[in-house]
Amino acid sequence: MSDASPEQGAVPILPVAVDAMGGDRGIEAVVRGAIDACRAGLGPITLVGDEVRVRAALADAKVGDLPIDVVHASEVIGMAEHPARAARTKRDSSMHVGFRRVKEGQAAGFVSAGNSGAMMAVGLLTLRRLPQCDRPAIASTLPTRKDPVVLLDMGANVECRASHLVQFALMGAAYAEALLGKTRPTVALLSNGTEPTKGTETLREAHRLLCTTDLRYVGYIEGRDVPMGEVDVVVTDGFVGNVVLKLSEGIALALIDMVRDSLKGDWLGTLGAALMRRALNKLRERLDWASVGGAPLLGLEGLGVVAHGNSEARAITSAIATCRETARVDLIGRLRAGLAEIGITDDSTSTAELPLTRASGAFDTLSSDD
Image 1 (cartoon, rainbow, N blue to C red):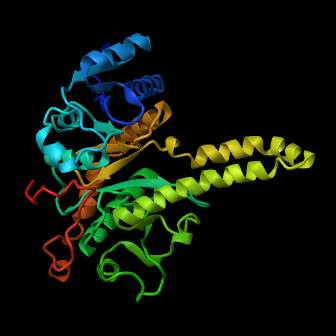
Image 2: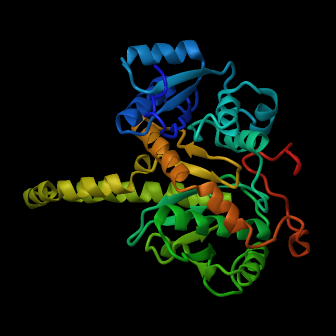
Image 3: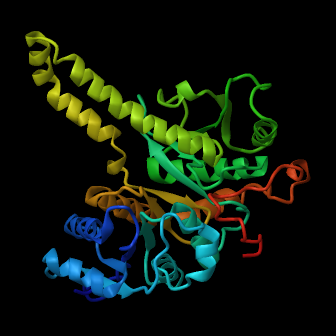
């Protein structure tokens, strides 16, 4: 098993590094997802982890001559471990090794379904932050009645300063332009009302700052407007964003099941269910998080993609596809350009009194110079 051989004179395609040890489903699910990704033309892929175990899983899967190789990592960061502590002490973890591959130019990006707080912490220690970015954010797209909407932060920063929300907005707009093809995407802050007096002190300060940028900022948006696709980018802190994400996933899939159940009451409903089965299956696939697979960490000097901890093979394949696409559109370069438009950072005197951010424990012992 080795990297694909490029044609004479062609630029080699960098592999996507994938954390074989991350996630709840075990090595086998990651290996199957990597194999399916290669068969879909998303290779080459480097699996990072316990080499003996990974190669055994590859042998069982009869991978053949697909462009998959293995890089050994002697340590694993568990789901329940303290992110910052594990990032400091387990320097040969699969996350460290994977991110180092990116830093050294040996991988286009790194994908992991492991501890998301540790992903952020290790990414910060290894790749560092983009200029003008104080707190990287996790961003992803949600399906809506109209076009997909970019939501960030989805869980990296539980508490945020106003300046962080402004930086999220800049990065979210760049993400929507690069990945969704939006020209001057509309940006909104998620709040409990649309009036300027609503929201927390932090939100009101972020609102004031965003009004001074060149973004197409439209003000506050309420939660009910998110699935309607009223804006292109929705900005919030990681606590609210993660709740919105998980609630949206649950409601969408529950509603489909409720419709199916309601059609089983009589023969006419059963007939209707049979006629609607294809449409309902298409809707379920559109709303299923596994079809997205992974969310990029915005604000690092390199690509890191966070996959769902419960990812099966299909979700891993989708996360690899996300990594490939973000690399193809030079997302890092676009984010750097977007952040350069404004100089609002942690040093802003208007937000200096606000509480420091914590990213699922990722920043507990990481200084601003790390």
